[in-house]
Each structure stands twice: as structure tokens, then as C-alpha cells.
Image 1 (cartoon, helix red, strand yellow):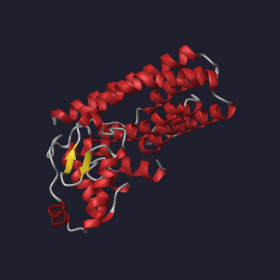
Image 2 (image 1 turned 120 degrees about the vertical axis):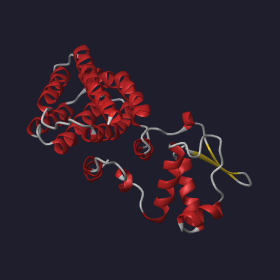
Image 3 (image 1 turned 60 degrees about the vertical axis):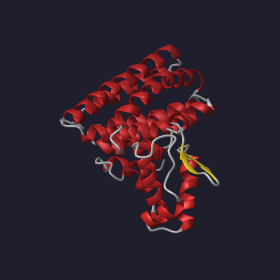
Length: 259
């Protein structure tokens, strides 16, 4: 994800159209509308979407735009298009929840808690392993990338948006240093997760963007362990970091629920 995309997420604390950078124009309206409706349950798994003429009329787009939009939704795992049958919503377990737009639709439909808790649990399993591998495999160049991100975090500890950008880079650098291609691929989901969780915390009452110095220090513990080749220490420090973030996220979700 580009810096521009990250800034789009962090500035859009309301998240009403935070995913607009990815899908625009006539086709984007169809993807956005149907994607939100599917994730939000207005078209539950197993149901058929409206037929092509209805979608053309509803969204004011061409037949080509509708068909291309359905192809995009199919690629995200949301629907299955069958000739002479129609477009059917697939079971939720087959959706590509690692997709940026699907994450954003969960958020826009008020389903943050449902998906975010699952993502936190997945991070608890995978990210300490990435740190453990990085401690044994990181090259000097990769260590430099992690350290540069950390220093930038420390320098921007009172600037929430800048801090987030460098926080994302820190975690991406750790995944890269793991030397595991599949973990690196998962790292790209972390970008969206961190942006989404940050937006949630911004929206919650009592949000305070001045407390990042302590968080940066926790990241430094992870970096130091990786740089020293202390695999177990690196894994434990990363797990502590994620659990702390989980606590902050859960508290933010609870405050939003209580509003």
C-alpha cells in the first residue's frame, strides 16, 4: 500500500468512504454498493443478487460496468457468477477477508469487532514467528530498515498519522527480514489492519495521540532482540507488543459501542 493510501485511511477517521482510493467511478459505485450490502448482510450467503437489468437501473451504469464489477466481487470471493442461474453470494468462510476493500466494508457496516478480533488472534500466532525468524536471518540491510522505521517512530511520537506510517513500515520490515515469502505476504494485511485499528481508536472517546512514546519503546525492545539474534526474546517482545495493541483496540471498540 502506498503512502498516499495510508494517509487516506488515517485522515478518514469517520471511515465512511475510506476505501475510495481503491475503487472509483461508475464501476466503483457498483463494487462499493454491492460489496457493502453483501458484507452487511443485506444479501446473505446463498442469496441471489438482483439481475443485471435491475443493477443497471439502480446504479445508472452500463451493462459492461455491472459485469466487470461482478467479476471484481467474484475475485474477492464474495460471489459466484453462473450463466442462466445468476450471481449468488458465497459462504462467508470463502470470502477473501485479507482483501483491503472487504476489511473496509466490515468497518463501514459496523462489524469492526467481528473481524478485528480474529485478525488480532492471527497476528498473535504469526507475527512473533516472523520476529523469531528475523532474529536468525535478518541481513544488515534489513536490520537497517527496521531501525530506520523505529527511529522515525520515536521522532514522531506525538504525531499520530506520521507515527502510524512508520509503525506500519516497522512491521513490514520485520516480515521482510523473516525471509519467509508467505509471512511477507501476510505482512501486507498488517498494513490494512493497523490503519483500520488506528481509525477506530481515533473515533473512540478519550482518544489520545500523545502516548506513543511508550509504544515506540516496546518496538525498540523487539528491534534490539532481533539485532542481537535473540530469537525467543524477539518473539516474546513482539507478542507483548501485539497484546498491548489488542487491549487498546478492544477498549476503543467498547467505548464506541457505549456511545
